[in-house]
Length: 176
Image (cartoon, rainbow, N blue to C red; front, side, top):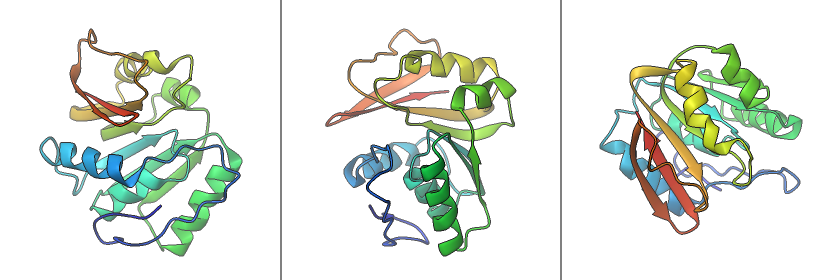
C-alpha cells in the first residue's frame, strides 16, 4: 500500500501480513477521492475513520490536508501498527483509539465533517451503521458519511442517501 496524494504522497504503508484487514485498493482510493473532491474540501476538516484497520484511508485524509483524523478499530495489532506509523511519519493530528465501533458510536463522542466507515463486508450490523451514526449526531450539519461495502448491501431507500458508486468489488455509498 502507498499514499497516493498530498504531503505524504508515495510513502509506503507496510502492514504486517497477520492483520485481519482488507485494505482499500489504490484504484478504489483514487476513485473515492475523485468523488469527494466535488463534495467537500478535505483541507481543514475533522475526519472519523471507523474500522480503520491499517489506517490506510486515515493517512490519505491527513496527507491531503485534513485538520484531524480519529481512527477507531478494536484489533490490538491494527492499533499498534497505526501508532507505529503515526510515530514514524511524525503525525500530530492523528488520534488512534482502540474501541468497538458500535460502543464508540453509542458514546456519541464528538462531531465530524467526514466519517469514513469500512467494516468487514460480512458484518451483521453493517446496514444499521448509517442510522446509528445519524441518531448519535456524529456528523456535522454539512458533513458526509462514506460507507464502503460489498455489492450484497443496498441503501437505496435510506433517507439521507446521496448516491452509491461501484468500483470492482468495492461500493462507496455517500450520505449527508
